[in-house]
Image (cartoon, rainbow, N blue to C red; front, side):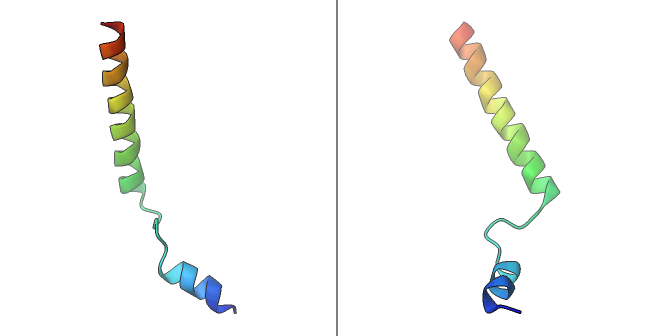
Length: 41
């Protein structure tokens, strides 16, 4: 077992959190939707 794999598995910069990813996706979609409405108006 390499220490790099252990280190990456322990301290991952972006841990797999479905709720966090879902919120980020919704926020990005909302910002794109608002910007699109402002451009069309």
